[in-house]
Image (cartoon, rainbow, N blue to C red; front, side):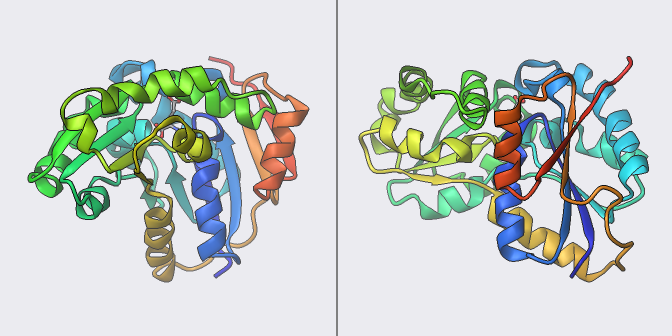
Length: 267
Ligand code: DGL
């Protein structure tokens, strides 16, 4: 398969999804777009995101002409996926927080869901818990500071372990916390901090993200559509806003985007 897929996130988080797509579908051409200007999404209102995202994605699709868009962001997917699909006439794949596999793999029947504040308060997440984790005790935890830490890490800066510990501690603090043996990484930035998260927690925990499931879903979708051809700007990450930091550019290169181009939006 040599389709062209646009992967979108508020920042570098979608690179955790890119890694899984490249593993499963090495022939696919990927373009990447990061909405640095408006990040973090996790502390924005639903209205703000529903106002911004459809038009932004529509512009990117017109500019890059991909076969499929992957919204590699839990916050955008849980809040604005329908609104995005309404204005785009190619398949749009979103992220579903990995609540089902976490519930299935928890031996203690206790799971954590670690997402952005915007994601963990969504009714969609409550519905996933009701459908797939009804027998589990579930602790929800929202964090924006972990998004900042993941961005710092990929910009070559030190990760602050005190922040990592402080952000995950509430999951394990209460009565249920002692039993939690699986945590859903319900933000695509968080798999980029997997080593730090493991280090920050004493008890044995599986950290479960949706990257592989998205790659599988993408494979299914691509089977049913014809290829539109190579991207106009191969192996390129488009960074919306003024952040063209060269070290961050190197991080994109390690995920297969040796060229980063800054895009300025005139609101
Ligand atoms: N990576 C995103 C997510 O999966 C958004 C993080 C943010 O911008 O707050 O939710």
